[in-house]
Length: 254
Image: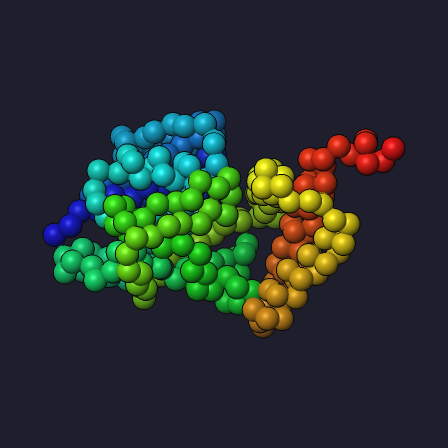
């Protein structure tokens, strides 16, 4: 039977890390890649593993690849600190490891929650952004600062078991995370040579809202869907405002 490594990246995740690690304690190995947490996250993490690597933040893509390098086993499960592995997913993964997986990387559907509400639309379900269960010899992450993608040399598959995700326990957490992510994305766009255009402050946020609320059926999630889609429109606007700030604003105003 193949063995499994689970890796979790952390930075000040004291409120979430215990439930996350409790849901994966059955794995053969747990690897924590921490960016120097200061809130007691590591005190809780040490109850589940002694394999803790600390690395300053250099971008999510690079950090994920460092985590993979520190995983002892060929098969890896990537779990974020705000995620929980369900019993059905655990059983499915163990069966795959026993029977030898027929694919090299597997997408896992996620049941995501906004505050205390299960979001079923808005593009949040099943939310196949990147494979989370995979052979580390077949997959690597692209080294982007945020919203990292991946490269796979092999076959992809899909699991039926779910991961539960609780990204925001309150609105304060949402705004802090989106402030950080919009700054990182603006920095990445600037490095890519993307130019700021004034119409982006209106057109792009509206396009994000329209896509999530109408095309992704966010309206079926009621007032929570409306709020969530509006907040992502706000995130999109902040991203472009910060991109504008990367250029010589005083020169433009003169």
